Length: 398
Image (cartoon, rainbow, N blue to C red):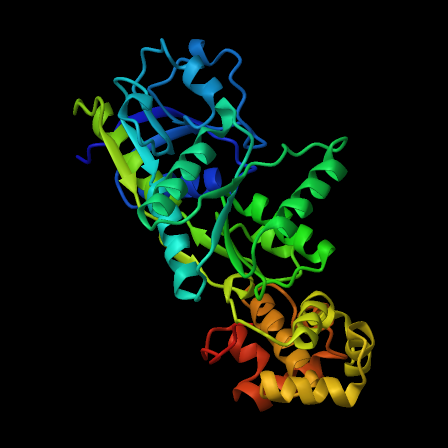
């Protein structure tokens, strides 16, 4: 007779509005799918975390995001098995006592971003962080890692925390961010502690007319597709190992439920990789006309702009701008616009549920047929073949 594994009631205390938390939840689900563990999972219907009454919850175990200080406080005296997840700390005393802790390795995240910017040829660096607060401890840990790397390499540690995000203070926050950006020596590579922070940085650069990535190359952390969809210049980002974090946390709790002690275990999970996009692909350009033109193209290529409009923005004749482009970039202005539109199209086609006609429209092509023609000419395959994964398009990154 088959033995039916016991069903355990497990609470997941996360805020699913964040891609970080969603990745961890996904990892927990993947662990359950690949093992004989049988869990009845408690999650709020809207995937947000509400702590009221959690101390009276009659379950078997909890996995929780301890980056939120309120969660740590709420679970301080609970008698159930708890596995904490969150950011790593340089000071071991900062970890919750007596609880197994699965951490994203903040030092490894910053080191990977920093190494990428060095490899892009940059020699000056800055960090865009968050205001100091208990809820932002993870950001302060990333700051510390950045400062330590700068000290190690004998460089000045330029850190700007800025203001928190709120509607009444938004204009002031943007003005102060632009002032900071304008004060920095150029070119410079900036590491933002999150993609949300990187998006604000990118928006400020575009507002101030600062060329990305020629003058400011930037990289975020999270690889959040929602944030990427809100930026005109594709954003580079470090991909956290959240799926591995979720799997590891679930495995620890599974072991605890079956009598295996895990008290005080600290496990650091490194980042998966970097999603390299245009924002960090620094190319030193000495030609101011080309730099201005690229800034305009990256913002408006998918709106169907023509070479004459780019020349008008830069303030030179069309023939003069074409000459500058052929000297510096080895291509025409039209080629540059097309290259950026195709890069946006390949990114859009990665979502297999998006209609090709919709991708064509969003990227500034007159029709799906025109996108088909250009795609086949440039890459030797159709948009449909690319979307279905039949072929890998060479050089498709913008």
